[in-house]
Length: 143
Image (cartoon, rainbow, N blue to C red; front, side, top):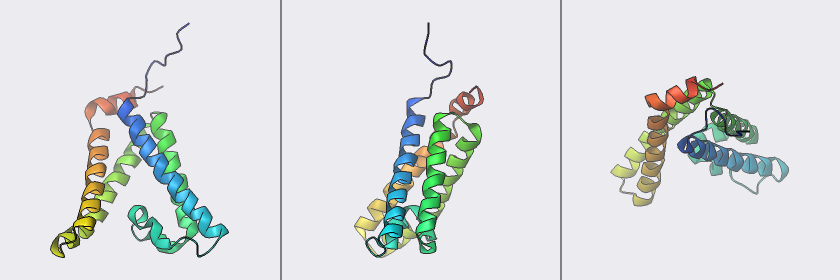
């Protein structure tokens, strides 16, 4: 008997799903801590991932954790709609990071520039990979 699936998940898709899962776990832990022990974690802990939505409180952290976990799960199941959602999330993250990187460049803040630039690079890599034709074909052929 052959236990290998007819359409295996590419390793890069697994890595992207792991990235979404790690972000979801982080947001879930921080959101849970904010609910259980108010004041232990600052709301700015979610700023790199939530881009202003952290001001909505711990429930936004938990909601985005659920969304991130759902995207990770959907990518592993090769769901094409989730691929588009992940692509949209990556592009929105790029757009949201441009002003902070520009400000860090003008104000000569190397640390902020490095972290913002790294965030843009990772998001561009995710968006570029998920938008490739061969990857889209893998998602379309999924059972």
